[in-house]
Length: 208
Length: 208
Figure 1 (tube, rainbow over the protein chains, first blue to last red):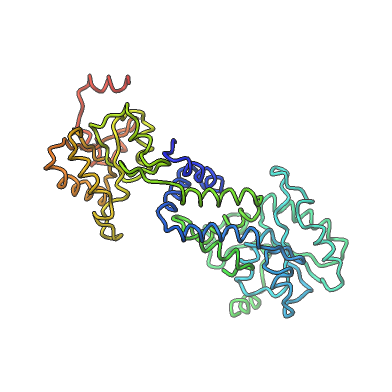
Figure 2: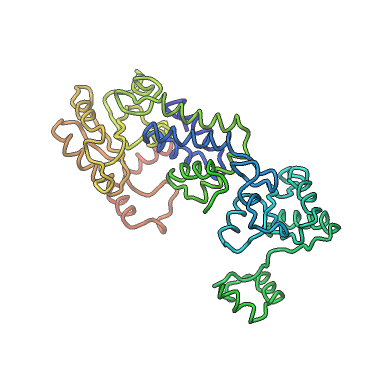
């Protein structure tokens, strides 16, 4: 593609470096921005610059935060006895949206993935181990995706943390609420059978 | 969704205003940018700002340009006798990529679309009519998409331009080169039959 303006060409080149955006989408986005009001475009680029320069990482859980210690870590009504280990901020948001978890988090910042050159030292594992050694932590929940990288990371963390004596658990895997058995994959369905729950418990969970 | 940082929330809000990008994709893009080097993010936002502030529109054909008269309009080897009317810069790029058109362009900047509040006065139609009245224009090609808006705009332009005496034509519609008849839609196939081409002509076109 040859652009009639080198400014557009440069903008398209930068936009197409974003994940999931190819050259055609980038051109569409650049032309869209060109047709917007100057102040709208300015406020977009300023918001991005500001996010990049102002956002901090919580010194406790490594979640993204506007303050040195994030709102969740500094919330005294949340339990220090239970830690949920997640990959990134989106997982924190997903779990927070359930309004069903009252412990604290630990954000790894990624998963161990030799293919992408990400090793244990690139993640916040040292800080996790020192948090786990604190007297008040009783349980650690591994809430990583069950991909190869997620399972590898969970197993690595399990080996690192088993000698701390803290109870280690993982998220339950099974059929989604509302799923029909017919369309479930075999692995998920067999996990649902293995980890079956007393009927009384499930009634109580449905009520809450 | 509740974000742990208001800077991210603002950036996501702005990014999700882009066409085709919802809140989830915007979050993914914001987190991607947050993990990039500061200078990479800066160069993205600067490229967008620069595109918005520096890009001009050619005073002749209204194509996007870095100069007052664009490269195509100021190219003396291109014919002034034939004008190709297109919706926007992407269509110019598509036609230029064929290396098969040696005339000039006229970029409308949109299509007539009452649903979106776009009327004839929002497009560069007055300037097109005055260009068509110039002595050296012999033919005008309507190269608009064959959507309802495109067809409406083409018809509107046809009524505006028919009294200028310039020859008016539209792009040929028919089967794509390489398409099989079996999978073509009826309208396209019947257009291909109606506008059939002498075999000798098609051989020559295949050679060029």
